[in-house]
Image (cartoon, rainbow, N blue to C red; front, side, top):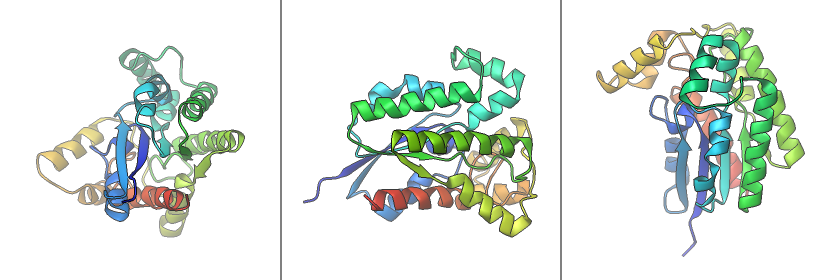
Length: 239
């Protein structure tokens, strides 16, 4: 009997899959639970610093594959001083948000994983935030993804082009001029209310809010999650 391979997922709410269509559930249905053990260490609200500080338990799972998808919250904090102040307090992050701190945190995560396991490691680029590709949010996401691609090259790990796949889709379907991200938690809370209390699907919520890939401007509907799952599936099957 073939031993199960362990796939470890590190990230925030998009990975956790409670307020976003779960790309891990898609992978489980495609790859099967008989051959793979899926361990989800996604925690809503996490930034790269939080993942870095919570790696010990994750590494003890002896993963064969590790998927790192974290940074959307880093980006949004860097663009919103009030959010940055709040997350510094709630998440006990000792530094202000910046792309330099992000790069250092991600590099530390990768190096700890390499030192503590024999896993194949992939860094996923950050998905779109809002669907206007020319927005400040998505221009900043693109800058952070450039850093991720550089880190992947320097550390000799895989880079999964999630943002690039979503960007191509949006350019083909609305010329990259979709609905902006609304910098408010109200839309996220409303989406949670509709999904968990009124049992509305994430895809229906997405359509109500005017998005093609997202539900509330940051979390994924089933199509957004599919693009993430596609890239991860290819990575796992290649090794």
